[in-house]
Length: 390
Image (tube, rainbow, N blue to C red; front, top):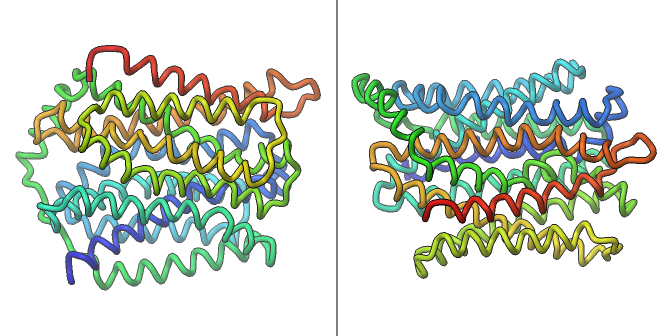
């Protein structure tokens, strides 16, 4: 039972880190009003999660490889809980930044920690173990939408932060009891990995997969993490609980689509073709969202579910990276993909707001115009695939 409980503990941390990413979406209107933020300021505040994640990935990987992963995972997990708890007792712009930055750092440690634990405890079923942990983590994004929105509606946002941080503390206690260490990598191997990182940076496939993943992940980083509620409220004037439910469909689509893409690429072996089809279908769904049609609520559920489902083709980037690098550099190559994915998300959030302001006639952000960023990104992701062969 030790391997299962240990991996489940790490997955709970990953669940919480994704929850911290997604919770800004149902909180968007409240934060804009209570802290007198402009849409641009909110965009930069939300993007700080992804900047922190991108910066923390490499140090987190080195620390988890070199030192006892249990201590670092428990420490960062607890810091994330404290940062959210600070929103309850010390609500301020500073505590918002603190929570957002710690969430991004926590995501880096949680994802890489889960990767190491899966490889250590399930060496022959690494892929299945990791996909299961990622699926559980993505459920954190679902919980951060409708359940959180309902809790906020029936109490207030600070009480909701108190409740969710309390539940996270119970998960931390579970991890304290059951999380077990992996074997640290010796110092000479760490130095070898650092010296070999240049080889990873010279590999064009890593860069291309990183850009593809970042562009296909924009439905999550732009909509689910920040602007979906604001967009749907502006265009459709729906209740906050309904727009959060629609937004949760993106996470649900990825949860359903990721194993399908993994199975399909193993079965057909045409990775480039599946990645291209996924980007093309994302483009079609994005165009349906921005056309001048007032979709019904049920149709919005379908469109957002399809957007997440087709965007899950980004997971194919990881086996591509694994096949394009020596086995001893796969973790380093994966970190390049993770860094680029988060940097694209960090840049895209304020850019989304600026596009909306540029095409606004009232001075407010025109979120419908800002949505054009999605089809542009999907077109770029398709163009990237026509570079040197995958």
